[in-house]
Length: 158
Image (cartoon, rainbow, N blue to C red; front, top):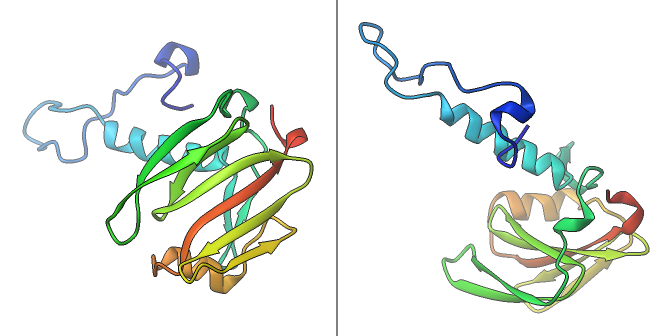
């Protein structure tokens, strides 16, 4: 399922009435709000973002290698304090935001995370799961974490 597949490809079409359609009238809008939510949840799954016991884990088991850049590019996003930011990306990288925190995936030999903090400190770890405190900082959009770079082993990708 997802936004990149036609109804024919996944064997369905949106036929349910929009949740706010009055009972005395016919369908006024298709049920796309549910489809949008489903697409977002599917994309988080493809990106391998899992939350367990209050900790964020990155394990993109269904992400395609073709989604990573072939050449350098720029990623534009809005920071938690509302500023527009531009992040330079290189070949074999992919960027997105989670709770307004920019996350850059990099194809690498082994997994690991580099966390850049607002005080210019960088924390590096050799696993793919954040601590509860770092996860809470992201969930709360405190601004303590400004960027994360996540190494993704190439053999995790399709």
